[in-house]
Image (cartoon, rainbow over all chains, first blue to last red):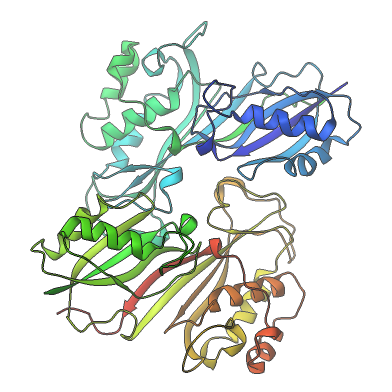
Length: 266
Length: 266
């Protein structure tokens, strides 16, 4: 029996999320079906991040155990032939039999994309949150700084999460205005302005339920001028979900990468 | 009676193209319905570019005539409320009553996007053509130069086109490798290599049926090393469709912008 590790990309639009639900198809189910067809075994993957319905991925990690004699690095191309077009295995390799993608120490990077313009763009709508009031990205970036470090993020955790602790470490958090070549808006000299694309990039050792989306929703409110950047410190210290902003919609979120501290090699 | 000009963006995936067909909904039909609902008149738009099924737009132009008293610049936000999410009017203004978006002299810019990697990317698949063999973008760019200027483009025109002349002028044509931040491939030092995103950007005074997609298909063959860049000159001078490469798929193509030489103001 070998443990195979996969890096999995998917467009989350058509899925109920990573984890099996009653109301539709989950990404892990589609993967289980494809791997089972490929190997003739009953495969059950374990995922690193149980992304929500509508959230996308370029780098989620999953493992499964198999007796198949397919070389580890060949699973990638082989399983893609059995998968729908909106799920792609980007890499496969052997992992240690006791490597668990959810419990192993890691750094996860997410990107939340806001499309900030007066008029929506039908070619970016699937992968970004459309915000039609001007944003002050510098204010957002200053607010983001308060969250970097090890904190109790209870204010940024949706109810219903079953976790031992709401303490997490954020290594990096940036808000970047990315003037998109296709359709940059005419912008005023001073903030707030219509920024085109705003990317909120966050790296941490783990995230609570809806944490990235609540942080994004709060940063957008600050960008909008509803609160000054310093308000973020107050919200963090309140340990109270009702103090933070709304949960931003799922389709703006992409799980970009998971890096493990120790190489998961066998 | 006033003539209103619209700039129209759309995700072409779900449409049979700009023009009405028997086999599904056309973009112009969706616009006609929305404008008719808004104004209470029976509106019929005239489009500048009759894009094919699956082709996208950020800047197609359409005009229509109306007795409505809605201010010209307000049509944009008003009609978007009646349109599906994958069609967005980005601008509206008044135009001269005799302004015809198809016959007025203009420069049209299209972008054709190739996603060049060993493994597809489910987050770019809707708007790019996946090519899984390495490409030499410099060779593509050198080949592209032969097409710049005024030429008979009969080799790059699909059968079935009803046009008086196959002579067109190309003002600019570039092939640009755009290493995408999200998932750049490990690349070798020398060409050809996996380039990530390759953008073929073309500006001309008009394009024959499938012309941009046939140019893209031919450039990809040259990038793949099937022919040297100089082959493009031969193909152009043959005036024979069978000499050029295949018609690249529609979903990689975006109509970016149409600029009229004379302002269409009334």
